[in-house]
Length: 217
Image (cartoon, rainbow, N blue to C red; front, side, top):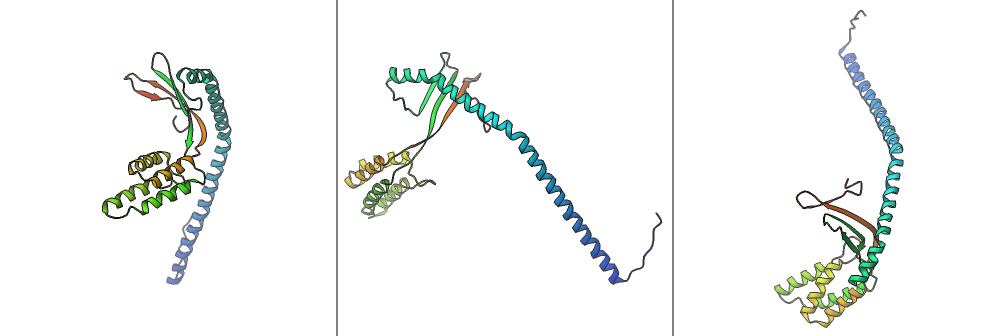
């Protein structure tokens, strides 16, 4: 193609350059839009293609977990009878005779309390209010308040209540002790999902977990 020379004024040249910049920007904007739409279409296609497989895997895991519990029901009953342990024990670990394989069955438990826990907390705080006298007592107050701190769900940690009980008994304060008693009586643990853990010993005798979920595998 034969080149054509065009004569422009300075203003025309400025306008032409501005036109090229605007056109390039519009082309990039259009290309970006097309690329994003292509990306979204790819994601949509991939999700719809893989989702049924994940649902199948989830169903198979659920079935296998139920089968494991069913298989150990007799062993759980015998264990409770022979060793006089409560059937509702939250965690049970079974190990083979050789000692190189073990399976743990359990339930996740979340600390939870009924509304009377607030009465116990108030009693404990009444006791705390009588303590602040010097630097040492202030440190004790700080320690007690930390044990009374609630988690993100608004509950006390059961492990901290145990520490609180020890401190109450050491204090000898009936107000403090009774407050802790009320807190303990308000405890209503929430039992959530069952879990299964499988482990084996490797060549150096260390326990290794068998991945049973997408996160671990």
